[in-house]
Image (tube, rainbow, N blue to C red; front, side, top):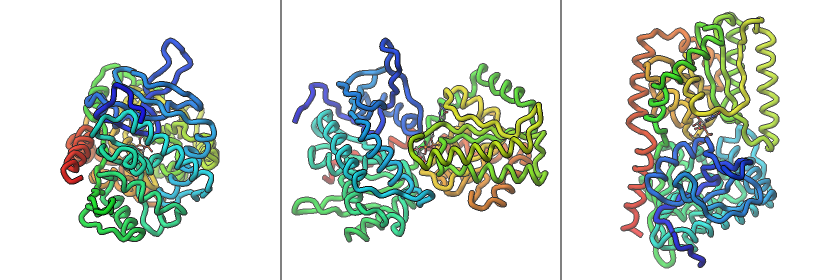
Length: 471
Ligand code: GDG
C-alpha cells in the first residue's frame, strides 16, 4: 500500500471535490456550489480532514493539494469515465431508477463496468489517504460500491455512507440488473444513512429480499468471514447551515437587493419563486402548467404576479436533460407569449447559476416559494427559503414527495401530480393572511434551527463512532 505521510483521521469521499477549476493559472480553484458541498464544507473544516473526489475536469491528474485550508485528494476521470460512470450509470441509470422511474432508466453493461472500475479507483485513493483506524464518510449514489471495496482494502477503517437521494421500493429497485452487487457494496459500510425513514425501510427490505439477512429496527446482521457483524441503516435528514442564511438575510445590501428585485418587476402583489437544478425530478413542468392555468382562468391576475424560475444548468450532455430544457423553455415561451405585456413578464426564466448572496436576495423578495418535486431526497432549497425569512413572512408550497416534507409540516403541502391541487395551493399561498404566514413560518424556522447541518453530521458521526466497539 502506498501511504502518503500526511494521512487523515477523517476522510470525506464524494464524486466531486468541493472546488471548481478556473482558467486562471494564478488562482486555479474556486468553491463550487451544490447541495452536497453546502452541507459538508462546514463539517470538513471543523474536523480538519481530507476530501477525496473528482476535480471536475476530464483527464486532470493532480497530486493532493490544499485549498483554503482543506486537504483535497483528486481522483482522475477520463472523458470515457465521465460518459460511462458519471453521465451514464450514475445519472442515466441510478438517478432515474431511484427517483421512481420518473424518466426511464437506461441499462448498459459497459456503463456498469465503468462504474465498478471508477468506484475501485475512489476506494484505492481513499485507502491511500486514510490513517489507521480513520473514520471515512462516503457520499452518495455515484459511489455505492466504495464501502465494500474500501473494507476489503482497509478493514481497520470505520466506514459511513450517506445516500442523498431516495432509495426506491423493492418493486422498482429490483429492475436493476446489478441489484445484488449494489446492495452488497453498500453493506460494506458500518452505518448507511438515508434522508427519510421510508428510504431506510426500502433498503432493509431489499436486503431481506435479495440476501435474506436479518434486519431489525435499522440493524442488519451481515456475514463477515466466519462470523457476522452489525450494520446500521437509518434516517438522518440532511439540513443546511441556517445561521449562515440568516446572517446573509440580515445584511443591508442583500435586503436592498431584494427590494431592487421587487421594484424591477414592478412591485407586483405576489412574487412566486422556483429554484432548482434543471432536473426532471423537480416538477418544474407541473409548476408551470399549474401557474399557466391559473393565469388563463383569471384566478391569478397576470398584471399582478410574477413567477421567477431559476433553473440552474445541470447534466447538459444527458439526453433526458436536453429534452427537458426544450420542454420547459417551450412552456415558458407560451405562457409569456400569452400573458406578458410590454412592461410586465409573467415568468422570469433564468437558466443560470447565481452567487449565494443573490439567492438569498431572491428568497427575501419572494412571497411564495414553490417546491413541487416529483421525488427529491430532501430539497435544501425549501430549508434555505425558510432560514432566510428573518421577517417571518412568506409561504412555502412543498411537495409531499420531497424528503423535507417529513420535517416542514407547516408548509402548504401538495401532490405535484395533482395539478388542480397545486393550483389551489398556489392561490392559498398567495392569499395567505399575514398572521397565518407568520404562524407557519415560526414553526418552519424552529424546525430548521433544531436540525441544522451541524446537527445532521453530529448525529451521523456519533452513530458511526459508536460502531467501533461492535466491529
Ligand atoms: C441532492 C438531492 C438533497 C441551486 N442553484 C443555485 C444554487 N443552488 C443550490 C441550492 C441548494 C442546492 O444547490 C440544491 O440542493 P437541493 O437539495 O435542492 O437539490 P439537489 O441538487 O438535487 O441535491 C437533494 C441534496 O442532494 C442534499 O442531500 O436535498 O434531494 O437531490 O443549496 O441553493 N446555489 C447557488 N446558485 C445557484 O444558481 N449559489
